[in-house]
Image 1 (spheres, one colour):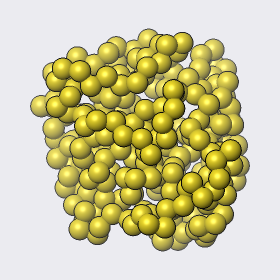
Image 2 (cartoon, one colour; image 1 turned 135 degrees about the horizontal axis):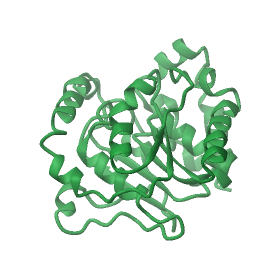
Image 3 (cartoon, one colour; image 1 turned 90 degrees about the horizontal axis):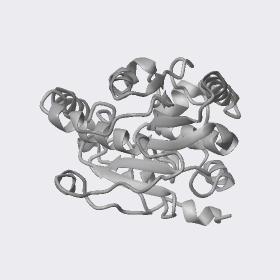
Length: 265
């Protein structure tokens, strides 16, 4: 098990407030670009029909993932909402994540197939947690701008988190919890992140290198990750990987212009 020191993020600051203030207009522009990017998205790999559970970000609900889920359905996947209301941390998923684990297992049992997990921001942190708790039910994990490798204090919303959830952010406790689940999930996992993220520090959203992890850097905002065409294409590519033959993202052809080189923490 890696030591807790590996997760220390004292030297990492939250994104600048200037960058944070541009989040909503940038996200709106990314949403508006979907129609222009339709040829790119039409060329994405088609799905095999397996179930995909989509987890919303902090303080948002299933409504925020509607565009992403609609895209997944169009690509041939069995997309599911998380059905746990607004994502307010432990208030939503239970102190030990038991409500989310129950939701995952219900889909797994109903479909008879392993479930791919896509989590946006805090939802990605939760996806990794339940993958550790119930790996037999999980096919792969994809996180979108999820600060799983750092303290909540490296985000611009940690005070809001404390206010809405009633949970105090304790750096020492947070590091211990990360250390309890040190390393990537016991299933293939991909971290999608952006240096232009105005909400969370991008350095805390990257996977450590292993045979079953990958990082995909995109250009865009945090609030637009679920509607960013380059993110949607990358998600489709990852989900299309065979259950017994997962491989890292290939940046061949035109993709080399869209996606910067992979980088591991």
